[in-house]
Structures are given as structure tokens and as C-alpha cells.
Image: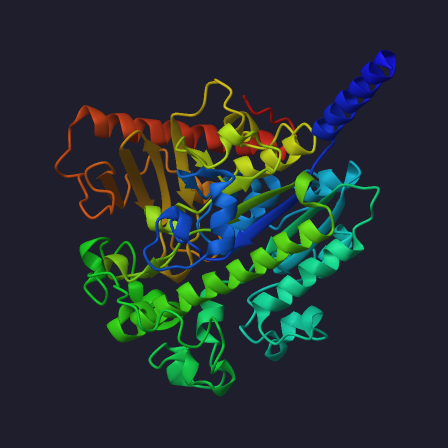
Length: 514
């Protein structure tokens, strides 16, 4: 009897060890245009997100996460490959496209080659700049689109993958797809599902009331559209709350960035984000923005329910991030592609059901980059990240291991459309330094990004401890100071290292120092 007991204990111990060592399933959820602190559990005063809040409260939140590229397509390339735009060469206004060799070192492809069943749902966001319609073959399951979806996807030609859905609105359509993927997963394989939500992107905001120009400009409530009447999220939710829009809405944006550095009339104020340049439409934008986040929360809750019902919840890691933040009237502006915290900081958390109780609900404030996410995904899968990936795995931070972590973070935005300048900067302690360069041409090359002997067209310096809203540019006040000189030099050092790394990367000899 005693011998049988010890055998049983040994067997259970072995099985427990096996369960811990077994590679987990991974779900990577990516929002579009969602800025940091826009979940209830992150302290937002209005947004109702009970399902995500539960994941955050039982997971690990990374409260100082910066996106590698604060604009759509290059941000997504960075999330797939672990390379910033200067390294990969891929962006809206660059001269390059993603290659098959680069994709071979992306996290989806490496997982697939190592036995994972992979799926992609939603906005791929970069197929137009690369694979020419062949992205579908790069996943085992594909229900996705390129470009910008509409709130009602059946009205958009690029959403043909969704036309057979029983749902009419893009977010629940994606929820339907998530459940379908989970139904199709082979039992003998771990899986990785990448879900790229379209919300709360401006394409969704503007298309809630189709065919109405005033509604597209957010000058009238979207719920005047008959099909939204009575909807639990898109009708009256948030419309009777005391929502405050930024005090700077519709004020002079050139107080913050001069006209000759960024002409707002080249697209921001006159076309793409013009609803944030008027107080009435900015207020409506905020309501729709919050509504869409709450509706996404419902889909995430349904996903968690499906995982439970299918017996997958105990071994499925959920990672959440956004492709960048957004200005919504702050500084008198709208949009992204700048290096303010509102555009570069993103909500990021990891829910791992295998975490011990003492680690659940933890907030980690160390500097994290979106470039860390693909390395983290591969680490969970037991795969060594390729040497070219620039990020670090977050798993050691989650496990509370004492290790050296970055004290500073290089920031960049190389998008030059709509009059935007190239932006580079650094976050170090309480400080953030930014420098801007105008490039007056259509597509940039490496030579255009060589600023070695060029003085910046504009600089910003913020003390985030004293000025968390980044309203007071301290460059003139700190001219000649040790801290400004230090930040300028560090930015230049990172810039030079990035350029040298790009040259090595192009010859396939790059080795990243870890």
C-alpha cells in the first residue's frame, strides 16, 4: 500500500512538472489607436471594461510600455519582427517593403516552423506594403483584411473575408472568428492566435453612421443611425456622463510645435483627424472611442469564456497591446506619429494562468518596448529569438527575477507624410528629450536619416515627474545644462548605433548585444 502511495505521488509530481513545462497556447490581442490607461483597471474614470479588468487584476501590467513606431503599418512590422523601422526599413514613407527573409524571422513564422498552429484575425495592416495578397498562406487560419476596415465591414471591399458572417459590426465579427479558430485548433498542437482589432481607430469612429457626412465628421451623435438604436454599447452608453475633453481642444497647435516644423493643414486638421480640432466633434469622438473599447471588452470576455468551455484556459497566455496611442484634442491636435506619451505609450499586460498567486495583479513600471513582445512570445514557446530581434523577453520580469533591465529607451517616428517631421528621442528617468528633422521628399532612404552633421529643426524636453502631461517644453530653460547635453548625446549615440546596426542587418551579420 505504501509503495503504491509513493508511486502515485511520484506520478502526480511528474504530471505536474510536465504541465508546467508544456509549451502554452498564446493569444496576442492588439488594439488600434488605443492609448494607455484606457481600461477601468488602469484607472480610467469612465470606461467600463469588466472582462479585461479581470485579466489585468490577475495578470501583470506593464505601465511604462512604449511603442516602437507610433503609426499603424511600421508599428505592426515591429511587432511581428522585433525590429524598429530604421532597422527593418519598412514604413509608410520608406523606400522598402518587408521581404520573405524578414518574415522568416517573425514570431508567427518561427512558431509555425516549431510546431505551433497559427492564426490571424483582423487587420493585418501591412500586406499592402509587402506580400501582394499572399499573407493568407503564412498562417494555418486566416480571417483577416488589409488596410482600414469600416464599422460595418460588409460595406468595405477589402473585408471580403467577413462577408459570410452572421454579424454586421466588425468587432463581434472578429469575436465570431476567434471562436471559430478555437473550434478548429488541432488537439495535438499548441496554438498562437494573433487578433488585430480595428477599434478604436478613426476608420471605425467615422463610419458608424454610413452615408452621413455630418456623422462622419462627428458633428452629430452616431446613435442617430437607426441600426444603433437600443444597442448595448453604441446607443446611449457614455452619452449621459460628464465626459471632459482636453482644455486645449481647438486651440493653437503651433504653440507646441511650430508651423514650419509641422503644418497641421497638410492632413491632420483638414482631413484625417479634423474632428479633434473642434470641441463638438471632439466630444463625440470621445464617446464613440469609449464605446468601441467597451464593445471590444465584451468580445474579449466571450473569448475567455470559450477558452474555459473548451478546456484551454489553464494553459493559454494572453498578451494585450495597442499599435500606438492617439492625440484627441491635446495640444490642439489630433492623430499620432509624434513622440508625446499620449501617442507612444500603450496599454500592455500579460495574463498567464500559471502564475503563482503572489505575482497576480502586479504592476511593473520598468521601461518596456513593443519590441519586447515578439521576444516574449517566442520565450513562452521555448524558442530562442533570432539575433536580429531588438527586444528582450518580459518573462523574467514577470517571474520577478533580479536582472539588469534597461534604464533608458530610444524612441523614433520616421513617418514623414502629412508634413510630419522625423522624430527621435530618449526616455531616461524622469526625463524625455525629442528632436525633430524635416525631410521634404516622398520616400526616405538611409541617407536621408543621417543627421550626423545636421542641427535639429526643433527640440523638446520634458520632466515627466513635474509635468506628466508634457505641456512645458524646457529646452530653452535648460540650454547649456548638463542634463540636456547628456540627453542630446545619448540620443545621438543611439542614432549612430541604430544606423550601424542597419548596415550590418542588411548584410545579415547583425548580432544584437543582450
